[in-house]
Image 1 (cartoon, rainbow, N blue to C red):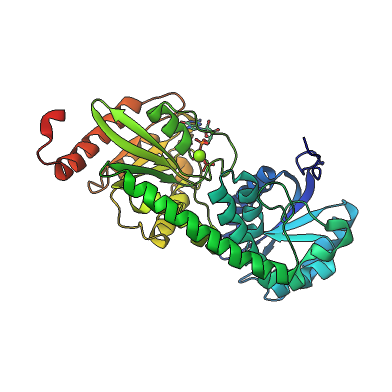
Image 2: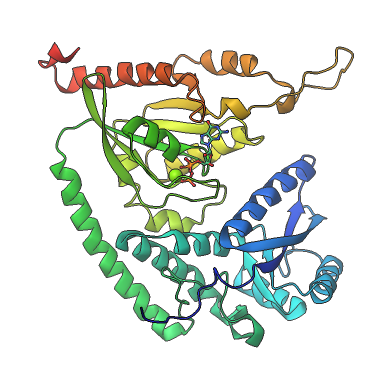
Length: 399
Ligand SMILES: Nc1nc2c(ncn2[C@@H]2O[C@H](COP(=O)(O)OP(=O)(O)OP(=O)(O)O)[C@@H](O)[C@H]2O)c(=O)[nH]1
Ligand SMILES: [Mg+2]
């Protein structure tokens, strides 16, 4: 085997500091959740979080994101604790990166950069690789002048890894050419994919969608008896997988797609549009939710928002609340008069609230313990039967 540049997997995890700002009344709780997620992203990318800095601000400082006092505090910590990189919870502008890096003197990353890096390492097929690389270069180009790429100690590592463990190019002229080339490649692949989809004919098509790490691939594996990679990391799935599933005697095509996340970089949504064709062209969606996640309602909003962004906002949806085995809640004391929060709601109450909406069928399951899974299959069957009856009105001998 050819010896290539040592991959980052073998190097020690990059020591990381997170920075977020807390805005408004609910700010403190929100920023904690957001930074929890950011920490999960850093770990998925192979870093380790040493500490967090949070500042209360009405809006981010246009020059340095946080105020100058806080920035100084961060810089001192970075030096003392030998930190490798500082990750900010929002997308930073070129000048913000430049200004921050002057003071902090180590690699400065934002949420977008981090997500792109994870996508780059997860991409397996040629299609996904081209899409991610394109999004990476489009992100990089306007930010090159300010980037930490020139820092001697900081060349490479998280933030600059391209698909296939090689470092991505940081020369402006070469990047421009690459972008043009990648766009052409993508066009070509898109044409092939469109032909493939046409050849599938009139089969009923269903797509699993949802926030990342909610259990989409696990459900796919149960339904299709397949063996798709599922793990407790963000963005385990990047490429859409399509499988034929038969429930009783009704066949349909089920696709498992990339998970969504808060502030999914727009460039990534753009370049993944063709992967998401599968979603856009399906007959209906199975929106999987991780009910055990404290922010699941926010996650539902994010998913709906992203669906609208890819022109799939008006598809019929079955809501599947997964991971009921991990759902925890705290019963309120009778004399506790503070308003109920998400933590005080029982699964029973939650079910009643969601099931009251007749326009949107929903079901509560656990893909892990298979609890209620047969009921989920029946619900799916009924839904497919309806689509089937409309599409093949003379073919009713199947049920
Ligand atoms: N407790 C519990 N864990 C589950 C359940 N279903 C899935 N998981 C776990 O949740 C994690 C994520 O599952 P995946 O199936 O990879 O999730 P995904 O939605 O495909 O994630 P991405 O592809 O990363 O977007 C894995 O560790 C699963 O084992 C469930 O019902 N209960
Ligand atoms: Mg998956």
